[in-house]
Image (cartoon, rainbow, N blue to C red; front, side, top):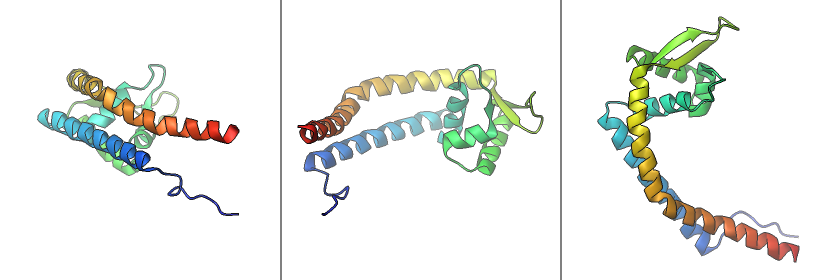
Length: 152
């Protein structure tokens, strides 16, 4: 019995849809990087502020959580937090539950920057949505069709 590899399962349409999706994501990333740069920030700083802002209100962002959300090492997250704190975007506090844990919160300056950036980003995503959804739909539909054929 031979086992299909991931490569065997891909059709030319899958490759086209994956390429289109990756292209759209790269265009969005380039757009985002330019918008962020125009406001004097780095993409990673913007991502950190957005991760903090996007946390549910009942939760507190720790440096460890931030590292996880940004897919970076904890020491890199600590350096990022230091730079954001020095720039006046966030404040660092000791956790009330465990004084060894550091909590990070946004300052008003960060809220203003995020409002500008998020509005521009939402507009761009809404413009790109049909293209992104089409690529995802093609990839998803193929899996559904394979499942239906297998079940028949």
